[in-house]
Amino acid sequence: VQLQASGGGLVQAGGSLRLPCAASGRTFGTSSVAWFRRRPGVEREFVAAIGWDDNVTKYAESVKGRFTISSDNAKNTVNLQMSSLNLEDTAVYYCASGPRAAPLRMGRAGVYDSWGQGTQVTVSS
View 1 (cartoon, one colour):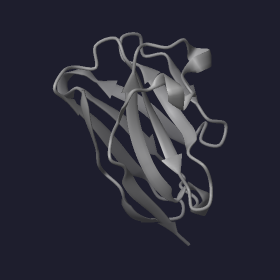
View 2 (cartoon, rainbow, N blue to C red):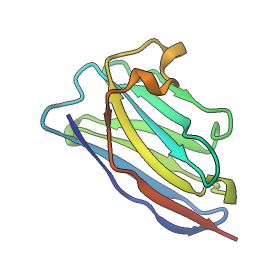
View 3 (cartoon, helix red, strand yellow):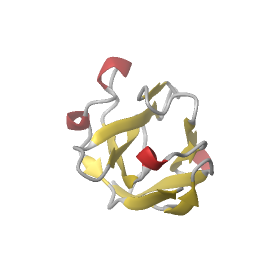
View 4 (cartoon, helix red, strand yellow):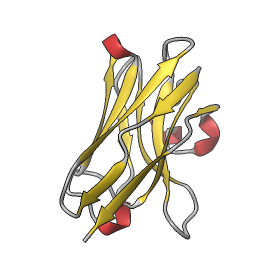
């Protein structure tokens, strides 16, 4: 499956952005779909994930209550709605998909075998 991440941009602290991750080539099927990010000077880190068939979600502690991941079956897209953005959310965001994983494993990059190209999110003060 090919993944296309979009929606990045420049936003002021406290603002919101929505990042869609669209699949092409085939549907997400029974996949787990996740968002990771790479902040300047920081290793890639898990942000959020969702099971495409059961909508079970998992979030990093740093984004709980601010970010929401959801699936749009009609558009074969997973959305990451980001609110109350702060400077530490500045990063390149990547979406990824892989075989359905148990919630305990959904935060591990090794679960995912298809990755999108990344979209830059910059939060300004």
